[in-house]
Image (cartoon, rainbow, N blue to C red):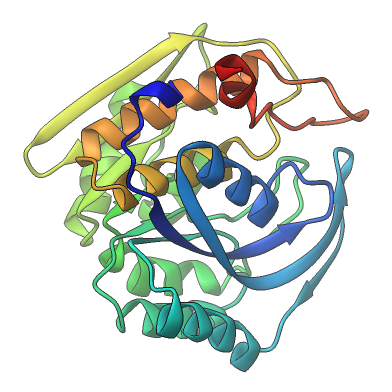
Length: 271
């Protein structure tokens, strides 16, 4: 895979929470962006205490500190794409939306709401703020089925539900939507990339594993890395999708709960 990557080092600013277990959040984002040929910079929104067994604490950072991190990156290094993850509250959503308005870089918005183990990572009253402020600013929105349902009110239990929810999110202002199908029952997982000009379907057999912690973070960041390198949306999504599928297959089986992916597998394959 890495042999196909262009020489350009795309810059990605990640605005998200950290994961002390290293499987999701900013830690997964950095690994994915780096592996996919980009430079990862961060503005951390919250520090979480977590491992494969769950989230044991969430400590939001002050709004001014979140913005200061982003501004320090944008004013010096700059960015070719932005990826947002865990935002947590209405106030953080509002501040991050304002940050997005200061740059023309495309934003990959992962509307993180609940951790793999069930911990709530977005306040209930912040869902409307995400709907109102983040969806219209998304060059790509990457919801799983429960997140799409929360944002649209459309039931997502099959491919038809994915399509209807995706259409609703496009109507809400997202320029593209990747409707992830991991939460949709069935032996085959289907992700549906939807834009105003059509749709692209990616599907593969469901991998029976508990090592899926950080899958959404990793996918969104890998896509952002592709966009930062100048890839068309369809190419960036397809390449990231293949990368994540293999990272799940090669997961090292760490911890006693929902384990991390193997983010660095392409680096070892290249040696």
